[in-house]
Image (cartoon, rainbow, N blue to C red; front, side, top):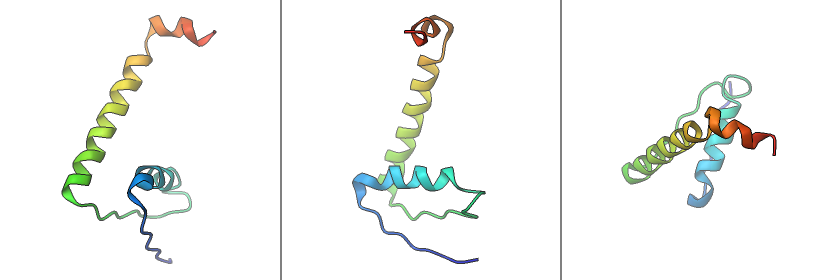
Amino acid sequence: MQKITIEVKDPYFENVLEMLHSIEGIMVEKIKTVIDNERETELELMKLQSSSMQQTWDNEEDKAWDAL
């Protein structure tokens, strides 16, 4: 197994992390991130917002709009 260290500019961090997680278990065995506490809190809030928005839009009333 090989090890890679990647330093990512702040605006792209979430995108790169999401991409890496999408290949975890396939091409990537383990992902370890080092994030400061403020950034970690921000990421957790973004995850909560994303999942709540998904639940908001995935309901029977909104399925009528899928056909449009």
